[in-house]
Amino acid sequence: MKSRSKPRQPALALPSDGLALVLEAASFAADRHRKQRRKDLHATPYINHPLALASTLAVEGGVTDAEVIAAALLHDTLEDTQTTASELREAFGDRVAAMVEEVTDDPDLDNDDRKQRQIDHAPHLSHGAKLVKLADKISNLRDVADHPPHAWGLQRKREYFDWAARVVAGLRGAHPRLEAVFDEVVKRRP
Image (cartoon, rainbow, N blue to C red):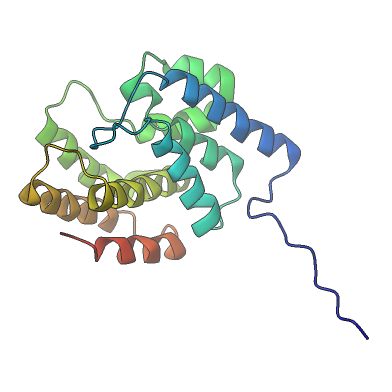
């Protein structure tokens, strides 16, 4: 008797309304970041970064909460584009907008204060925002290790890895599977 294998389940098993939300968020983020590039040698399109977060959450973390994945796709829109919180709230709802706001740095703070605020604020984020922040740190460390900003020397890369580890220390307990991914990535510290 011939054995039949089960059909492969999709990696992202979202209800159709969740899938629509994720696709709308991806489209919105792509439009808002359309003129932006990463600071690596190849000037990678910026949208690759939010897409990497969404993939990390869904594929590596098994996260199926469409609002968390949408927030990951939108996580830099308030900080890096002309998007407003009210636009996000109108388009994607209160929870998505709130998560994006939670992970957005205050532009009025200098770089050192922003970094310290992320460390201090990490334990107080909502669960969904913690997942977005964790995926962001995973993605950023991968980029620093594989495609760093062209002007960054060894010391700056090491400092970034060390700082990211301090931020993630405040996120511990939110998602052991993603934390294990982070722990593997942080071993790549230059």
